[in-house]
Image (cartoon, rainbow over all chains, first blue to last red):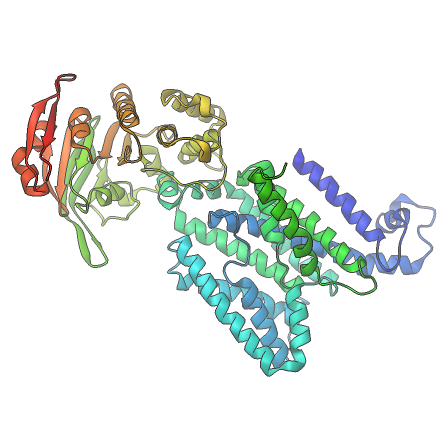
Length: 332
Length: 261
């Protein structure tokens, strides 16, 4: 029920987002462009509107939604695996791994394409995913969540330092690199949507299938084993799939913070900790949250754009603090 | 049908190069309430963890109902034996009912399982442990004694043949210690569940157990009926304390009085 309401909200938000921007396009025109069969008498006369909606805004809206979904789902799973409601999708060093790889790629003038994805996307994905694998093996194959956490922090710092070094040695690239790490959807394309959507949505469904095991793993390793869960294998599965999602999200949008932390956290407070409902609810809410953030990012200082990572933190953090205070009954 | 719930044959375990258990042989009778006692570091908890496959023992050293434990899938093992740890730490606000329901996990797969029966079994387990009134409470908001009941209810929801408890009363006051152990004893008697419990208090062990295993330094010193296992001479050897055996006027069971140093 809540899920359907959220889906409806997402749809409304998406249509509304399509109307706003440098050119304001009436809601009726947006509908006609998206569903031409609704107006057989001729559709929209303004060809520019059609291009703006179909070529620019729609892929951007969809990419923001999909990225938000992915970050929220993997944040939910990371919080479950780490048994910590403050965990986020970047715990295994994905953000610093991707950022380092992107910085190195830019500095070396890396040129490649794969499945229509550009060099930056490719290096971000590989950098993030490989870093997580290294963290996993350094932690002794995920022997405990504590060792995972520690090796994630260690490798994260190491790669951040390397990225700083790359930036220091290639000062002409600093602006590009910094801008990338703040996250943005201004380079959204249909190709990015077509590649990231199946990766993120199918992986999320896979995580939902096994979400009951994640509930049980919250009670501790020994406890979960005694209830019949193959803890080590399941932990690897959850980490692998959610890392895949995160790396996919980062590769199309840069490092966008806060979505993967705040969305599952808030949803857990509001709807309870059962991952069977929490994962799908976080998924849709993450889509809404990042879509709204990106819409603000491209309209607040229009025609200039603010990196969306700044928006998610500026609006997310105070809300988060409000919830923490509320939980401690400091404010109603 | 076999009369052995658990059998250990030459079971050894090393941790970081140090021997924790060496060449342990043991039979635990079906339907017994077996207590495992001994000083800290004797290997009691390690033994329990090996029986639960929380640690993976060598092939042909641990048998559950005559079947080698290494041949069990974890899910199948969880239908035969369930675990009651000292406590569980859950940082997320699961309800008592959700925690107890997790006990049904071994019985439900993707295409199998019976939700109606699951909810009946969970209901019954909560009734037997007298926690029905806590059903919707947050697991983080209940007392230590209540939490222990919830953990036992979850273990019962697994419908096990064997219940393995690791110092189940160590966080509880005297009243709750006795209530928990009495509950476990009555469950054992009524359902024929075999109970294996690591215990620290000798008087509890003498009172509740039908059989005792006394361990020291990774070996079994003695096993059998409680009054034969606990003797002043062994207690002096292992704990370095003089004890006297008396008879509890309330129950007629033996109990010990120890000297203080």
